[in-house]
Image (cartoon, rainbow, N blue to C red; front, side):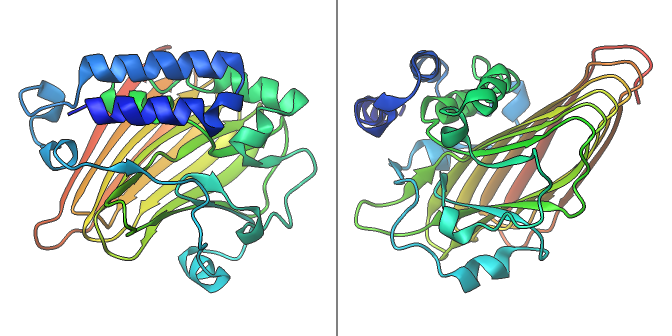
Length: 312
């Protein structure tokens, strides 16, 4: 059940992804090999005993093209946005500049395409320093598959001492339908809030249409010393969609992170959350909510690692 993803990766790696930096290509190669070794998890594994991903494993999903055309209308995107502040918009994992709005962000903040950041000086070095360091793709088939197909994503960098006056929204849209059958997209997010900075970031995952699709998302959140971050993740995709998410965070000394995971959509939704309190005095608030109906299934699986003493 993994073979066609390996074949799709070979096509992906030899096409547009071939222009990526050598270090990223090496990570991708390792990730697809690890995915092939691990295979999809089963209910015989302790961490998956309440959730069967057989419907995902048994469906032939093809890779959705990034920045899918035709793009959603601006009005559709605005309907998905929760506030009126700055926003980044991604369609099937690809950044869409024309639907994004960055007005009001302070100087020094980077919010935009991860692929573009990796090609640009200081932003690229910072992204490289953190990308794939938290999401443990060697231990997770889904994180490995996302990493193998890592082409673009959201990169948010709030420099030391900076305060975002408004929430920054990241809207990830999955398209549905097409002649090639059900599609899978692998959205990626990297959020780095440095020492003493403050930010509210809202990630929303939605779909256009109610057909069968699969979103396999990974987000990495780094909270620097004394920084304060409120991070909301809202999943509101269609009722026939499959959604698997991996969120990993690391906090430094005297930092605060409020992590709020909300699941509303999908026929099958799984969210793995791992947080590492890696500095004395770090504080974490972890909230989860799901609102379901009918045969919907949702599973929030959490791990909190108190890596340093005197954390809360």
